[in-house]
Length: 208
Image 1 (cartoon, rainbow, N blue to C red):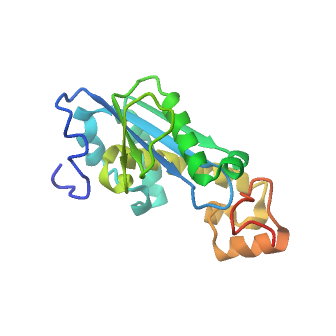
Image 2: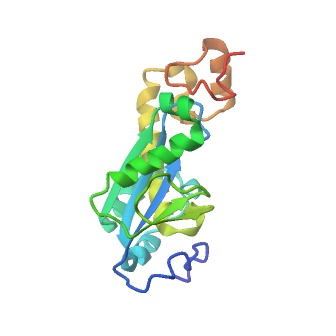
């Protein structure tokens, strides 16, 4: 493990039993202008965390799209349970992006068959109304292999969803930008206005 110094190996140090089930929870798409915010949860006994590190799991933003896609199946073979959920654009606009992100996270945890003893949640805000014990981890996808694994699953799932949606909304260059505010995307919004899947509560989407 020490060959991977970017992970914080003290995060679960209070647990001495290697068979304790820990979950990592992360979301992707908070900064996008288009489409849902997507969350993933992965569950693994502590004894299997070195396996996640050994296959090269790390912060999804530091991996190429091809490598993230390769890791999805490997992650799913190692963890004992995983789930992906989301909050849609209407929920984002109604609740705000933070609360919608936490809702997506909560949904992904509640869908699990294997109930974890502890959830490591990316960010500084705990998931409201969750009965499972949780610990918030700022920059969690850099510090925990579980959160990093969740970020990879969520990122690949959301990217594929946006690529599929791009067929219906070709004018926004979504296959390339995945809904994020690139120059082409902003120019298309100015020219065509927002689609039904744009987040109209966001500054970059609001009609002036």
